Length: 318
Image 1 (tube, rainbow, N blue to C red):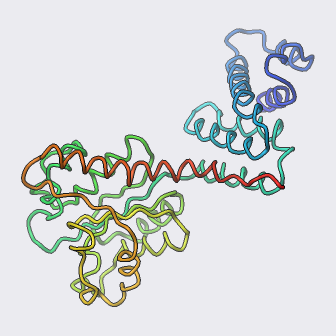
Image 2 (cartoon, one colour; image 1 turned 60 degrees about the vertical axis):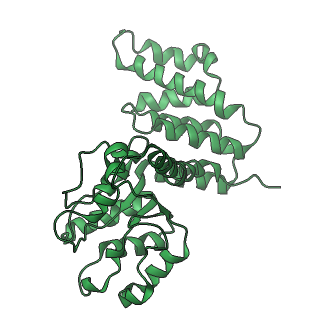
Image 3 (cartoon, rainbow, N blue to C red; image 1 turned 135 degrees about the vertical axis):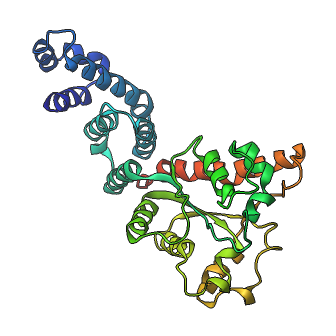
C-alpha cells in the first residue's frame, strides 16, 4: 500500500506522460526489477487512471465541472478488484481537489462514500393474498411476467411474480435490493431491510390494495414501515400500481385501515405507473406499450436519479 501511495503522489503532481522522467519514480521503478513484480501492474493501473482523469477532469474549465466528471468516472470504477476507485480518489484529491471550494470538497467526499455503499434501488412489495390458490396479480400480468421477466407461467404461484419480473428487468442494468419472502420476518431480517433501505438511492414500491385493507389490522405491515423510512430519509420514490388502472381500481379511502391513511393519501396524490392487463393473450401492441412504460417511468427514472449524483455537484461561486 505504501508503494501505491507513492505512485499516486508522483502521478498526481504532473502529467502522466512526464512521469518516467521523474527522479523519484525512477528510484521507485529500480526497486522493482522483476517483470512479474506486482508493482508493475499497479503502476499501469495508476497511469491508466491518471490519463483518464486528465482527459475527462483536467480539461474542464471550472471546478464545478471537475467535481462532476471526477464523480462520474469514480462511479464507473466501482466494483473493480484492484483498488481502482481508491486510486481515482487519491489522484483526484491531490491533483484537482485543492482548487475546489469547501462545499465542492464536502460533496465529493460524501458522494464517494454514498456511491461505495449504495444500491441503486430498493424494491418494496407485498406477498399478501386473501384469494386462496395462486396470486391475482400474477394472473392480471401473466404474459408480461413471462415475456419481460423471463419467468415461467406464474398463474398458480402464490408468490408475487410481478415483483420478481420487475427486479429481473431492473437488475439487467442496476444493482438493487429485492427480498422475496413472506410476511412475518424476524427482527434480524427487519434490521437488514432497514440497512439496505438506507443504502438505496431510489425507493420503488409496488402498490396493491392488500397493503391498506382492514383485514390485516394489528398485523405487521412491512411495506408501510419501508415507506415511512423512505420518506424520512428523503429517498427518490417511484410508485407502480399493480392491481389494475390507477386510480380507478385503487381501494376507496373509506376502506383503508385508519393507521395507514397518511400513506394512502401520499399514494393517492402522487403519479403512479400502471400496466395494461396481459391476462388473456400476449397482444404485441399491449406488450410493447407496457414495456415502454416500464422503460420510461422506471428504468429511465432510476438512471436519471443516478446521474444526478454527479450532476448536482455544487456550483462555483459567482
